[in-house]
Length: 255
Image 1: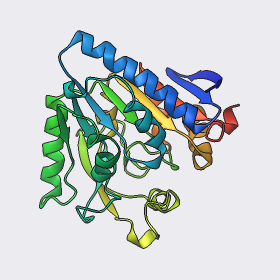
Image 2: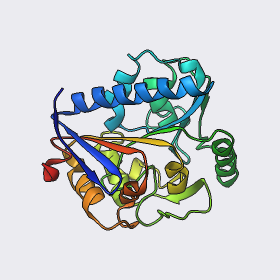
Image 3: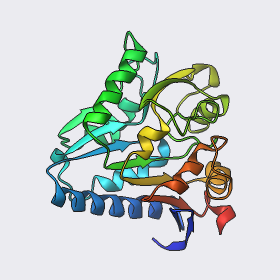
Image 4: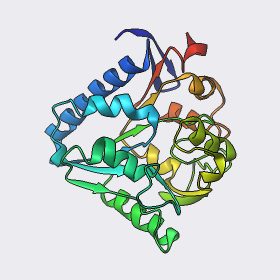
């Protein structure tokens, strides 16, 4: 479980592990430690989770930790609009299978991608995020540098809302096929509800799990490019408490 290298980019701490297993294990140790620390200070905390194969090792290890789940209110970052409610590709379903259904959370707050009025659903979820200010965000970075579903064409660092409807970037939709979530591009929904960049950056502590060869370019851009919505993840360099966990594949250009 060896750490190959550590570096900082702006305020962002970047840790490079030898493989995705050690990445997931170490990230889980750190997140669990922060959860326990925060629960000593207050009765309950609020967490946002990402749903993607990149999170699997982290989520698996987090469940092994000694955590008082019944003091955590859980949220997720985004959800497709119009996908069958039982579809395994749904992000709520993904997390229900891997985390939400395996631990006894105080509450699990799902985005309803099949709401009759998606705009009203955004407002409902935004109100929840305001009512339960985020302590910890566990995220990934997309191949196009997106955070949640804030793809370059729709990302806004000054977004006035906490959640919004977005049209998905073709690169983002293709990633869902590359990840094995959908058999072909035409099956990937075109729109989604996402927590916005300010909604994610409002979290007090941010932990990003980004393994794999398909993320090499995104990781390099996040660390090296100017901070713009061309690569939304660059904004992480402005956060006071953000850590990026990478492996020898995703951080190949940083070794």
